[in-house]
Image (cartoon, rainbow, N blue to C red; front, side, top):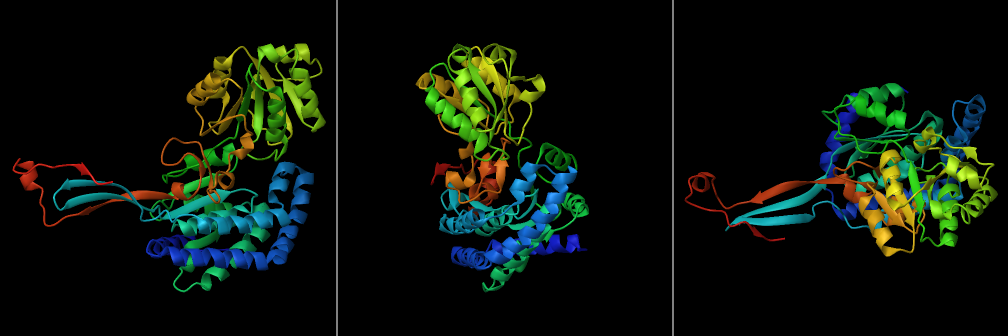
Length: 434
């Protein structure tokens, strides 16, 4: 489909100004309308998704996409239920726009406020995850941002029907700008979008390292996201090994292609003889292919030898590498070298070890005695997420509503001028109001 991308971006920018003025009630009406439309159209959505799945089977057979990509593409009753529930959950959340975050009385009758406001226009590039569209649309609407959505070609039937239905729902809400949600189609559209810093305020890539690096290297627009999901679990010498096994199996198998799935398990060397063989047995029972370092192979000889390359690999599949470490600091050092700053976990009953790990591991999510799979906007209670950010500016971790607003300073005066302050005739009082 041929589209005029510059016109779409311009219209989205204009829509963003209207969005910023909408009431919470109007935005919530839009969310409820979308949820109902998608719920009522479930069979239609699944029919279009089935077309994508049929075409994707051929791509799997030819090796153009892998099985994990195919799995992400598939919608079912559970995903549809969660999709609709996620939209309604966003509706229940507090409106993040126009909140007074901070205030300072600069002088009598001269008050400064820091107030939350929308970012503006956000471009989101994602791969074969059509359920991303309702999530992002809901968050964009509640945070008063317009979005340009570019999904993977594998999901084009599903993407089109979802955006069509969302726009139909928005048309039922008086005064709501239809150009809030926009779908792009081709790779050429991505290249053009990356050059439109005049209209687009933020790019959020959701995909593999190659996609993220390409975007970062080819745009002046700020980019928020993560390149890899190389997550770790460290099993401490003071671990409850039953907890450790349950958590490791869950973190690897509950959804192997997710970015918060564990890829490397670090085991304290004191546990190698009596515990490591049990862990491997349980992982293999769950059909996980297990690799191990040389120290691990001494106790479980049949393990495939893990190499240095494995420590830096996001498998996205039922594969995990295990490495022996001499102590907690060895584990932390390994994570900070090879990790992607996404989510890492310690299994331990030692409170001091937990505190040390949480303070020194440099990741967006640091867990104790819980599966890395909890690193998710929906599970955090954010309603949904536009993605996971591993950067250290603006937003970090699962990015929900609060990550989609920025702030502006509003100064309320009563005729003041700067000259008397510059001349020393008047002084600021700088008294905090909020």
